[in-house]
Length: 299
Image 1: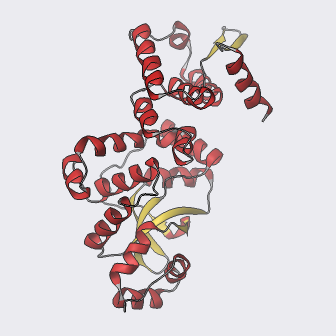
Image 2 (image 1 turned 30 degrees about the vertical axis):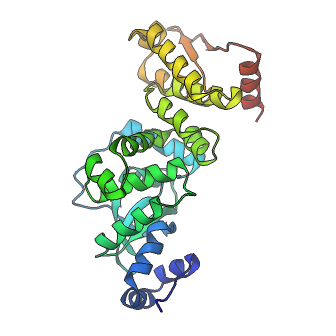
Image 3 (image 1 turned 90 degrees about the vertical axis):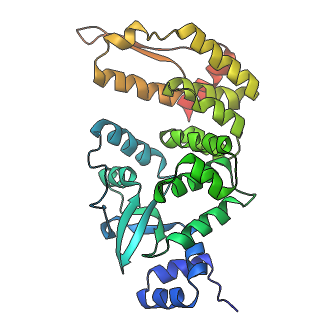
């Protein structure tokens, strides 16, 4: 009978090179299956970037924003690394999260660990995991993203691998757009919003509007159709124009305004004259929205 390894056993094996090699020899498929779905906390100092990574330049501003998000909320989506030898790992995917974690000063980072020659076994393990019925939409999206990124698959190839329609796969992949939207990610994980809500929100590029709509969905228990109607109304009224105050703000003040928008989940306008005098305007449409803003400030 094949030997079974529980989650604690896998974590123990990662710290014992001899036992890990023995386990792989005895039952490689079981070890890879467990590693594929077990998140390990690895010391950052044991991880190194992949010199073959095609992407060598990372935008400092967006990296800083990700670092701020990690400092506030932690890392929800683990990176993926390949185990080279004992206490030495190489990044396969998630270098932005790795670099942002370094900026924050994290000592450990959550990671999925792959072995040197586990390509076929890992694919089988991930597909097997996707078939589980207890996964939330965000977990499914991450699994699809890992398959696509690590095996360099197109959406069409991925849909064939997992036995799902291409449109289904594409809709889940669009959820990965929420990597920087901690509230929406947690809402998906905790079941506060449905896949239909998330699909509608994924079509909104404006970060502040997306978060405002999310909080409105949760506060007022809006249906998917109601959210789609709100988005359609916004897009009709916007007509591609940005508020004049946004255009007049220098980049560093626009960034501050964006942070206020993200915090309040609503439209915030920052105004300032040349002498530094100004005002911060937070808009709300009804008492329910006002109470939500008060709760945010008090907590």
